[in-house]
Amino acid sequence: MATISMSCISLPTARLSTNRQLKRQFGHRYSTRMSIASGSNETKCLGVQLTEGLGTLPKVVLTSSHGSEAELYLFGGCVTSWKVAGKDLLFVRPDAVFNGQKPISGGLPHCFPQFGPGAIQQHGFARNVNWSVLDSENVEGNPMITLELKDNEYSRAMWDFSFQALYKIILDEKSLSTELVITNNDSKKFSFTTALHTYFSASVGSASVKGLKGCKTLNKDPDPKNPVEGKEERDTVTFPGFVDCVYLDAPSELQLDNGLGNTISISNTNWTDAVLWNPHLTMEACYKDFVCVENAKIGQVQLEPEQSWTATQSLSVI
Image (cartoon, rainbow, N blue to C red; front, side, top):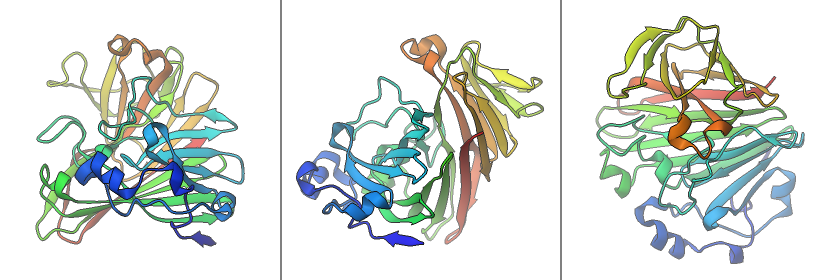
C-alpha cells in the first residue's frame, strides 16, 4: 500500500487562492486545513491530484490505473463526476453554481444533519461548507481519499453540537464507493437525518429502477407536506412524470438502468431507505437528462457522546 501526504496533492500555489483569500470569500465555512502546496509528479502516478475547479474552487481528481476517473469538490465534499470508459455516469445540473456560496446541484451532494426541510436550511449545511482533506492512499492502482468536516461557528449557529464527519471515496475500475462516519464529539446526545442525493446521468423516458417491489412508500406527489403512504407493487419503477417518492426499509442493493446503455448497481450498508426523484417540467431545462436515486436515513439517528454511525455506498457498472 502506497500512502502519500496531502502536502503533495496539489498544483502550484500560483494557480490557486491563498488561505487568506479563501477565508475572506467563505468566512467561517472555510477550513484552514484546506491548504494548497506545491505540485508533485508522485501524486499523478498515485492517482490523486488537487487542482483548481470551476469558480476557482479546489477540486480533487482521482484517476485509477484502470482508466476510470472521479472529480470532487472540497466545497460540500461533493463528488461531481465519475467516468468509466470515458463516460460520465453522474450528472451536474446546468444551473449549478460554483461560487462557494450555494450548494453544488449535482453529483453526490451530502444532506446532513437534516434531510429535506426542517428546523435548519434545506438538506442541512454539510453541502454548503468546505471539507478538508485528511488522508489519501492508493491500493493496487485504486486511489482513495478521506475528507473531514467538523463543527465550527457557522454550523453551530444552526446546529449547536460538536461532531466529526469522515467521508472516504474509493475509485475502482468500474465502481465508486463511499463511506460516511458521523461521530458525536459533544458532551450531550444529538440526532440527525442524512442522505446522499445522487444525480445519475440518464434518459428519463427510458430509465428504470429494480429492487423496490414490496417497500412501503411515502409519495410526495402532489403534496410534499402530506405524503401518501402506500406500497410499491412494480417490479420495475419508471419516471413517467414528476417523481418524489421515499421507500422505507429499502433493500441493500438496487439496479438502475439509466436508459443510456448502462446498468448501475447501487449497494449500501446502513442506508436504510431510498428516494427516487425527478422534477419533470418544474426543471424543464434538464429533467430529461437525469434521475436521482438516493440512499437515505429518513428516521432520526441518535448518537450518545463518543458514539459513531457508519454507512457505505457502492456504485458499480454491471
